[in-house]
Image 1: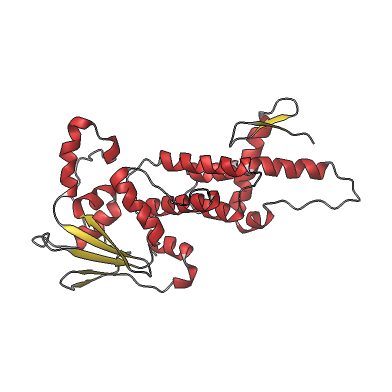
Image 2 (image 1 turned 120 degrees about the vertical axis):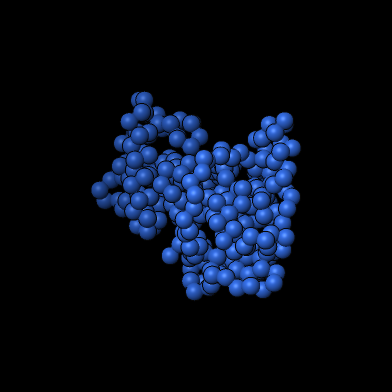
Length: 283
């Protein structure tokens, strides 16, 4: 199973047998988009790539060629929404699509408008990928609904990882942090669905660490409250117990994050690793 098939099965478990197809405007058939046979390639000197927004003014005109040439259409999701790209642009930003498109379209056929159909990729996440390719940033369009905004950003980061999208994604991660802090200001702990989504990112991913860090204060509060209860009183359940049972690695990462903060505490104060604000902690 390829990486994108794994990604899609996590996004939509009920569509495990959904097949992707590739075809051109002339209706040629080709293998599943997700399964790209590797061909021997000549080793070439790697060229450092930069997001268009980060290209210097003198060099920007040279990058405009990415917007020229043949176009491709990516048909995404059960909705079969069409996304039109300059072929050079999408290949520049994603090695995955570079392999897929250059395998599908043979020499001499570049003037044709090609189509790739992929029903397993979520439309909303791919909308953000398209926006990021052109602008180097994303807009979740869920203003005020912090949980929905974070979910959309995590979905984007998942897909970005699977297609090896050109980064960096610092602005997206910073956006997640800002929204997690807004949830904290509203007195809300991190929703378990965000934890589940973040834990599907690669280990040590900055967004995954942020979500784990956002749980430390509430985990510390749970330990402190239970330590102060009498033997006759029932202990309160851990607010993250269910997701800890589902994701043992989350339990381990949360404990490690808590331990790091606890070892650095002064007197009865601990510093929230998400916000940097101090809070009272004593056992």
